[in-house]
Length: 404
Image (cartoon, rainbow, N blue to C red; front, side):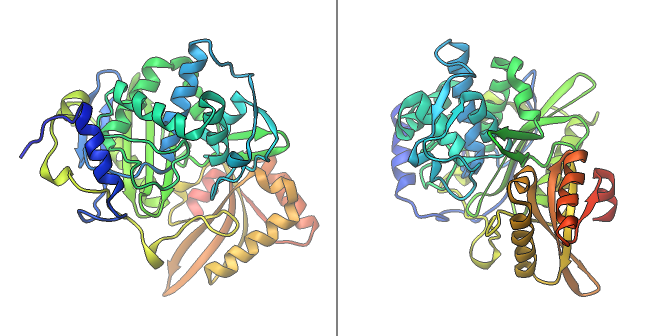
């Protein structure tokens, strides 16, 4: 049974119901995805595109969209200063590392939010624009409605878990197309491979960059409840597609699923099924209820301890990397990573920590890496470690793909 589009007062009634729902209530977990032609808004493929989902760090796309809107309106500039508040600096678990009282630019905050997915940077940006994160979240929700994201509500600027903060694959595709339509001059922000603020550097967390021919943005996200999410944009032969994947069970699967979806979308056999706007009216009974909990309990692998992400495929990596060793348990791998980061000091910030889990002949091995590096940075990192008698091997993108 189809349900009419949710508008006006009905939106807020649904929000009230969602806030009262416990995490994981409602339907069982299934993945959602959509692929659209960016220029026409036609939908090439979709699975559960109107299911409610927790956006995780994909939330930062709206944070940056509003910031760019302010810049284009002349009320904000990239070089405006932001004094990082205590509230922003205390954001967890993924922080860029901004300190309370530190002064950064709006450009710094945007880059750190996009490239490194820094929650502290996103909140600092929100407070610069709206004074409080709460006020900014209201604006985020209103902007979503104006864009046609009819099932999306925001509760914060970062994507940290909040029961009432929900979206859909279809709504995220609307937001992605809005970026390309409204801010084409700033789209290159999403193709950056690293970011530096002050003396601290971070590599990109966006695994699709370098893992798919033609991919040049946009954002990834993860929480236990949402699973592994991604918004990707890719162009081939003058044609641009946008792909959304929500609810993958690990980072490698997320990247592989996105690659497959984009391959089908670019193929000659991909035929439009509907439009993004028309899809808003195609709600079914199955789309009702709270978002699912994708990963729970022992199955939920969070970026813990030294900030590493457990992955199953090298497709989750980008750029050059340094291998820090292979271990038989994740605990030992995490320990090795922490030891390496202590030895590297500030230089550790240039790489994105990752642990690749591999099984062969009945044995599981955990390979520790710092990825997302440029060649020179990878070589310098290894030199620091080897000078301190620590194991380190430099890996090119091609070697990573062949080895793992």
